[in-house]
Length: 445
Image 1: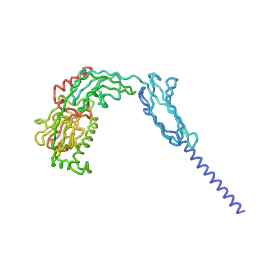
Image 2: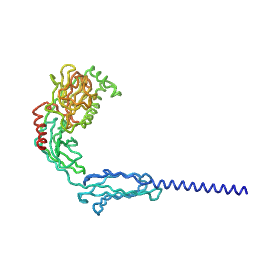
Image 3: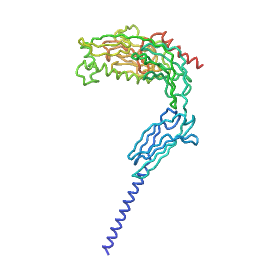
Image 4: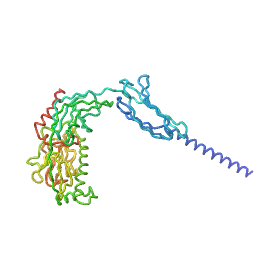
């Protein structure tokens, strides 16, 4: 009897274990199925779209694999199929962009219906269906250029004033592969400062105003312009061992692999220069959408020019050419540690080290226009500080790649350095900038 009870007891335990195992397996399968719903990400998820605007769909199978996808646009009671996809075995992630072909929808609201199915352990998994509300807008914004004469000197700048008929997400001036942002002023009015880069061939320079609305519609408008070509000087600079040792001491931590002072100079003059020029585009985005400056820009008093804008500099060492670079600023020399005034009113966006420029201050004047002060021995302002025209911001020096005490003065438009001489000229400022900005004031009355 005791043996029989023991066997019965063991049999019951075995049955309980089997039931428990079945319950665990069933619960695990149920959990896997319950959490098998695929993740769907649609970009943009709503709002206005055009026939050119791409809609990006990203799918991820949280469990199992993707099985099928269908995307339809529904306007009224008429669905329009945009994408149907049946996935082969093993696909867990999917990414694709689609557009709504012109003529398939009318301007106005529509719903985007996204259906996704999956498989789990070889069986049908959970499906997901999402509906997203959009507005179909296939009408580009209207652009009217108000400023009529744009005489642009190579290496210089120009200002265009224009209106846009609707809200936009991007606007400015484009040419070749470059874009310079425009900034909204009042109502429909926009202003954009843009350069004629010193190194761009005239046949590639065809500036046009671009406007892209929230739906992705794009409009290009021509600008009436006249190019004035200009050549730039060349200078041959002899490198002394004393100068190379000075550069080596200041920049050896930047290029520790350099074996000689000459090798370090070449790396600094080339690689670090390019890094610093890229930084100017980052600072260029930190700008006021409206003008902060007033009238012509100040030149450092009692200073003599040492080197001009876009000057080709050929570097000679022991009678041989070892490097060549373009100098994108204006060198001004006065007495040692001469006080440096702010060329015009604005806001400081940099007060510190900037590689080849040494101790440097960059002041934003609005509309992407900024002034740069390099090689300073002392800085008396801080980043974020507002300054007035003529306010002392530091003293000249020989920091960075300077061979002697002087000021490297630069003018930058949305990251592109331009000729500072124009901004010292009251007549040029009036004819090319101030008078055009008056169009905005006159039109907003």
